[in-house]
Length: 111
Image (cartoon, rainbow, N blue to C red; front, top):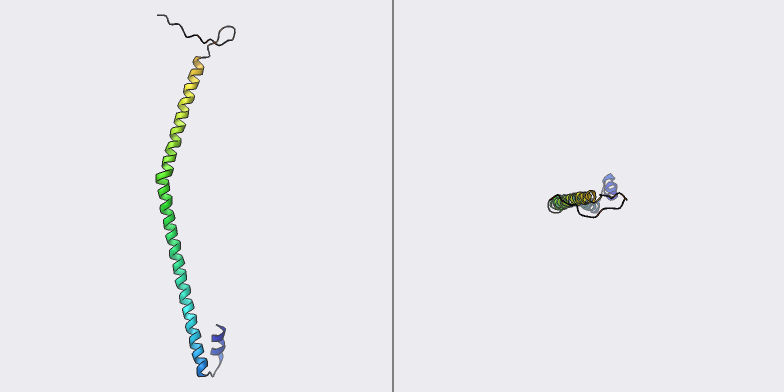
């Protein structure tokens, strides 16, 4: 860039200086073009990466997370049933005799 500025500021240039000026201007144009191409390439790679990440997250949610959520819900329901069963067993076994000792005898039916 400095070469172009210094050569353009001269009022009279030799043929060699004109050629150098032309080549440097072309080099600047190519560099700008390459920068645009690199920007486009980076943008494309970034866009593809975002799309692939979105598909991956969607697939994970549909295949893995929903299954894990269902499994957790079933485990909670199972534990709730087990707790109710244990509480019912404890309630039925809390029949105490007058001495405060737990009565483990089965109830006698009137039959």
